[in-house]
Length: 94
Image (cartoon, rainbow, N blue to C red; front, top):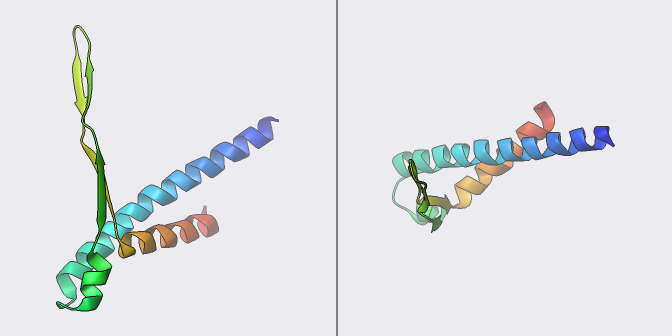
C-alpha cells in the first residue's frame, strides 16, 4: 500500500515538473520564433496563441490582505511542442 502511494506521488511530481518545464520551454521556442522567423504563414501559425486568465483572488483577513492574480496561460503550437519534449525527457531521464 505504501509503495503504491509513493509511486503515485512520484508520477504526479514528474507530470507537474514536465508541464511546468514544458511551458517554459515552449515560451522560449515562441520568443525565438518571433525574433528569428520572417513574416510568413508559418510564423503566424506557430506563434498564434489562445489565452485564458483567472483572477484576481483576494484573501482579506483582519491583519493581512493578500491578492493573487490574475493568473493567465497562453497556449500555441510551440508551447505544446515544448511540453511534449519535456515529457519525453522526464520520462527517459528522471
